[in-house]
Length: 201
Image 1 (cartoon, rainbow, N blue to C red):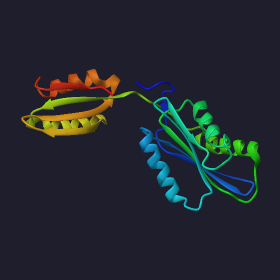
Image 2: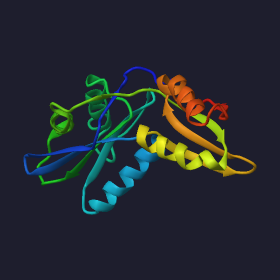
Image 3: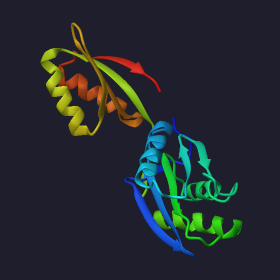
């Protein structure tokens, strides 16, 4: 189960501010876990090779992480993290790319700049409830496989794994609150022949 807060973003958002000749480009990106967040950071650094700093904060599954990336300690990562917390967001990477313009902002100025940059990206941002996901493994006959795959697509669930033996074993990722209905549907569409295995995360 996810700890509170229980909201994430439906899509990535960005905003740009110019503050005393420095450019601050803020990104708020929904992510599933820390690995996905680190991959998004790598892409940002690749896209901005000349940037002076890429500062970030992450809240995912109730855990946090942050980096000032060379800015004075506490002037970038923590203010960005506080904005995420203020918006009750989880499963979100917030990163601010800074191109230094030659004018020093001082510690207070940096805190304000990073706070304002990420706050502008999140201003009036739509939020979606983040519902705990689980894995359900179902075993079906080869004759039922195509029907089950179509149903998985139609419901918007994802197929995490499939294995072929005497029967087809399919592992799907779905919201925890949809499991009972999914089991009933699968039993109905296979005329009672579906078998289930649980994998808890």
